[in-house]
Image 1 (tube, helix red, strand yellow):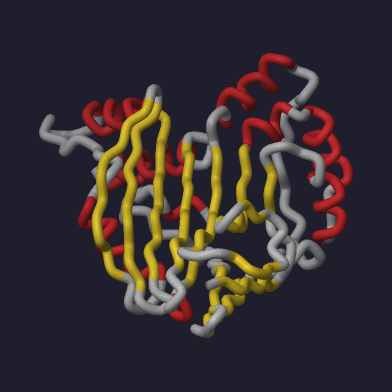
Image 2 (cartoon, rainbow, N blue to C red):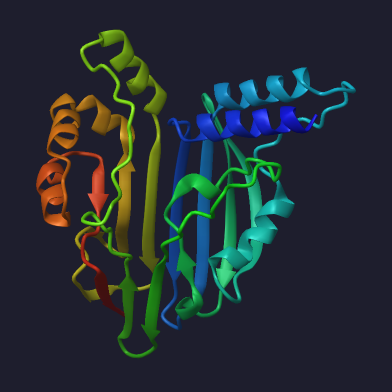
Length: 270
């Protein structure tokens, strides 16, 4: 049975990171430094059906507990992952055509203690039977806040390390095969990741790159739009940008990509 669980976890790991997730994280910040975190996660319905069928087929006693995407106990336990003093407030199951999901709201009293991991790979429980040889290095967005009139916030971003990335073997898809290319595009269709900060007030001054009214977009990536841009895919594959400036130059005109390249964003609001 242990081998079956490992196989199931491996299957879930693969399909989770081949384009079946939509994740939006929004931090709602009050002028006193308190606020909420709203996290909305969707997975393709077809993928969830596959997981349910898989668990049912391999249960030894025919009494497998049906896989559920939203588990409140897990979300309550995850509150501490966002920082000290973060508390689970509510959760609800959501549905859209071809997608199933959930929305969770956490509250915090001090944004200075908050840490946000923008990676989507912790949004689905892949089972505790699989132990990785080494834990992945987590890089968090952190905050420094001073209450005042106006209140001031500094958003600290981890700096991507292009120069020191180790060279690894990669399997390249044959982009000359139209069928293969379409398969990858369909796989990532609908996959979006976004992280936003919304202040409860008016932004008076900021160096953020993407601002609309009281909302700051820290990251927004629409993977389908990227894959539909054949020229961009070829450019990223051939040029392999080695710095933030090079990556920014390649992606600056691409719809569906918003990435904050400032290492620190300053916001004054009241």
